[in-house]
Amino acid sequence: MVSLLFSFHGRINRKQYWQAGSLVGVLGMMGFITLIALSGLSITDVKSPAAAFHAVSTGLLLAIPLLAFVSWSGYAIQVKRLHDRGRSGYFALLPGFISLGLMTTIISAAATNAPPAALANEVQPWWLALQAVNVWFFIDLGCLSSVEGPNRYGDPPGAPRKYSLDASPSQPLAAPKTSAEAATSLFGAQSAMDRAIAAKDQAPPPRRPAASAMTPLAATPAPATASFGRRAPR
Image (cartoon, rainbow, N blue to C red; front, top):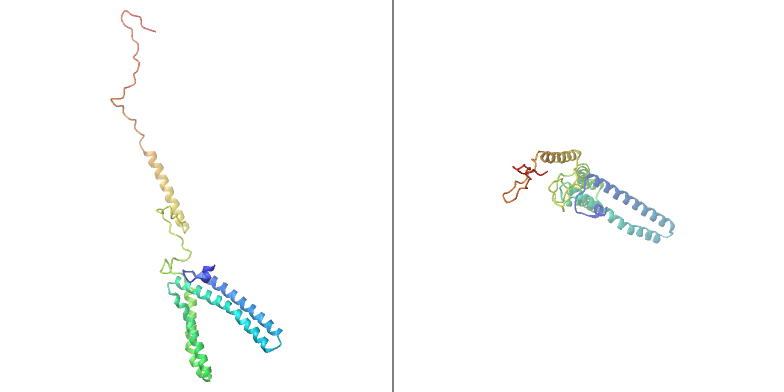
């Protein structure tokens, strides 16, 4: 979770992008509502304008860490999602540059007391550019799927190692990703076992070693025969 919200390295998929963005949005909204409520209660309790200004200033100071958290996490999420789409993370700064140009145009028009029509004409290009970038980010980062395979920013998020029979002991076998791969692997193992059993059954019986000339044959007793003039032993 810490890496998801604060790291600018690696890749996240579309599901992680929406989950992390929703989490940051909810936390930021709850924090700002809490600060506004506390500041409002502080303002109603004071009687002098100086005390009210102090209460508002304190609320703004407390809002700085919350704003920093929301901004940092938002950029980290967008950068990793841009990496997942095969794009540079610097594209995440594009809305900020356009917003800066928009605010500069408004401040300049207010300082020169420009009429509303002239202000609208100057602001319109910046506004249209900002909306175009927002639509692009919504489609590219929020709707499109991840780029297949690894890229210069890393491996696809959550991608398991490929199943290989040649894996070394230091690199264990990865589980098959689909049921078809699992069935194929099981069928291959069963076929290998059947071939091994068939080869064992077809193997010729081991030959007995032939007796060598140096090995004396076991003497077998000769049948007793009667000799002439002598009685045969019983």
